[in-house]
Image (cartoon, rainbow, N blue to C red; front, side, top):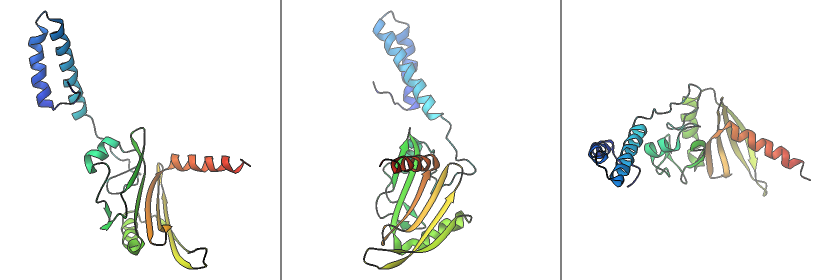
Length: 194
């Protein structure tokens, strides 16, 4: 018998298990205990309190660093399809990384022609975000206007780039500060590997 059942079905099975438990049949007693365990499993899953984002957590469409993977699956389905920000669709599927079933990073890439719409939406929600204009170039000598925006809070950092992987792709990333620290530490360690 499976480990997941609806609360109603489990209650019926548990009630039925009471009559099994009264018999002297060992197999019936084992089944009764198993059914009681399934009832407990269903109740604990359905009554589990939802984790709420902290006051300082950066949220993107209701997602935040540390959010439970199961809750994300229930809310959006995994993998997440048809994800938009400011009405702008993702170029590819939204990339989510988890550590111990908690959201560790989110990456949303989109067409750079729509950068202004996404940036305006992010600035409206997080007016304290800092954006910096610069010039990016390629090996052929061509230059392009680049915009990079950053917002760092206690647990996470939001990064918005007009050109990320190429001149036609912008990205919005929400990254765990612990992950950023690990990456920086690893890079420092690798610098000494000569």
